[in-house]
Length: 402
Ligand code: ADP
Figure 1: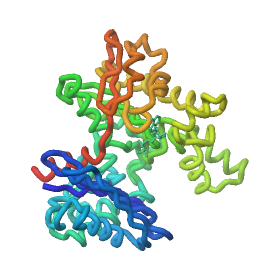
Figure 2: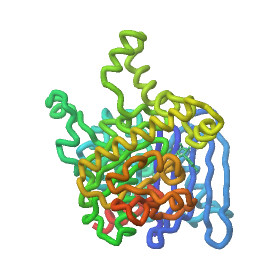
Figure 3: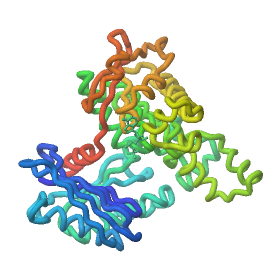
Figure 4: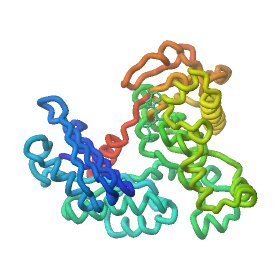
């Protein structure tokens, strides 16, 4: 069966077609600038018999519906399409950012599920409406195909109240569900499963710390295979230092900026989400550029790496304390998978906790999941490439089996 996996953003649709049994990617692509001047679709097909085929279409794409139709026309194109007709699509999976407290796992999309997604819009006002647009369009175009929602928050629904409650008046939790939810759950769950395999154990036997360092960054403490704490909060702003997001700050900063800088709340929110993190510290948010600048003597670039890796180390320490016994630490996502400097700095000085990197393994380049700890490290350290689309496909297969 072929799965069509959709990640619908406010002005974009990312997608993949995966053959579910063999987990082979048949096509991957991105529709950009929906509703803006100069829409664009880039599709890469993997027909199996020959090299990959890229195609680009540039034309106005007024809305998600026309974007989705363009994707389908491309996938079924006679020359480089990977499916003969839409009837080959057996199920559609949608990445949904916020499931609130309504979803602790992936769900087949029904009317009550759509209503719950609507209800959760206040928790993710930018993301959930865009996800819903993608779902509605897909349901119109494929009315008879099962649709599955896979939530970024679901894996973290096992956190206990002591980890998810903020110490603010409890009524805010009761009335408005103000609490920590956590994100990147699909990625944390996926790499945890892969790590268990490398450890030769079942996931429910494993205590792990999973460190997702991409543009967005988060860390999860996993006890007996379940998320028990995570660094992102009610929104994806809390915790680690990210590309453009601040991570932890003193919550009183808002009042300070309002009183002393005359900033409105919306401007402060934009400052913390879009102008902070690595970019705020050194003007750059791509880690490759930052290392290059640091090597050329840019003091603030060096400082940005120090601030980010120090925060990561601090959270690793905190999650060691949460878990007690840790079988493995896993690095994943763009920086986690590719950046030996950040990995080494994030683990620096933790030898007393039984955490020892093997420098040579850490510096070896590879796209494969691998162990990078020294033989005498009591906590094993891994680099495991995340694959959210494959994780979604596995979730879909599970939901459709039930
Ligand atoms: P997203 O959160 O958007 O999915 P990614 O997981 O793709 O992000 O990660 C993007 C980050 O990964 C960027 O900061 C980029 O600089 C970093 N990155 C990608 N490749 C490398 C590399 N070879 N070395 C260091 N950082 C890298």
